[in-house]
Length: 290
Image (cartoon, rainbow, N blue to C red; front, side, top):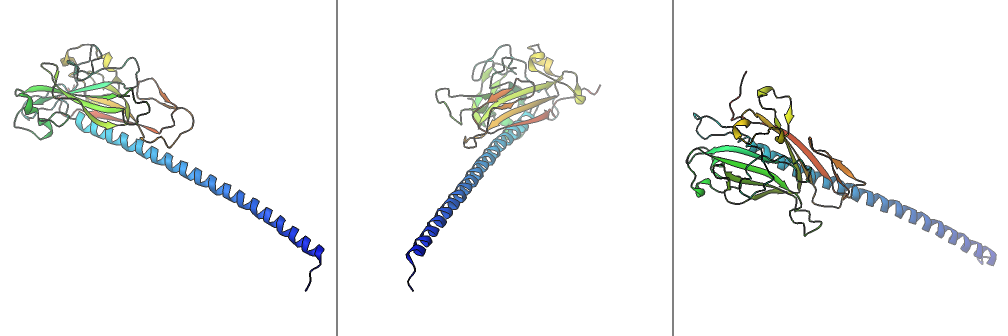
């Protein structure tokens, strides 16, 4: 059958319109699918970044809690324990400097925050493996310590430890070092515990509070440099700020984080961060029951 020319032209016109409509619908569907994929990818990146920050914070606070509980420890169960918290610093000495075995209160509100120092007793050939080593895992017997010598484990955050490498995700570091209290000298070297930890804040129970501590104070409020004045500190409260290692999450706007008594830390780099807090009581310290 022969189709009249005017009908053929009409059919061709109808097909072209349909094609244009189908093309427009396809573009719309493609854009919707693309937006869904972008949104899904962004959500996945944010969730992954938040998980990284939470895991980093959880590991760091757990490690600190386990080690801080050693404060006041004596390997001989019949011997007297010692005050767990080391004396406050008179100046900002940072390990491995001599005489940095003290608790530092960051009154300048820098990114790194406070520094915590915990005392324990060394005695050769007794106790468990951890009390025979520095916080970095080096054998204390290497340093020819005398029995009943006091060693001090110092914990702090070194933020932006490599200022020449801008944008380095791994230069915010939780560190530790062990000191010989009698000489104020470091035993070995400092050690990185975890990367991606940007700040730490510490509060102490008010001296004399005993087991019923309801108030925590700054280290610089314990003004004396004599470590025996710390004997009534029964616990410490710690807060850390950890970050994700990837910047793919790209959180919107500025993010503000407040650790205990410190001034807010504000970031606009879009990286997920996590605050984690804990309170650690010193089980190895005689407690005044009055």
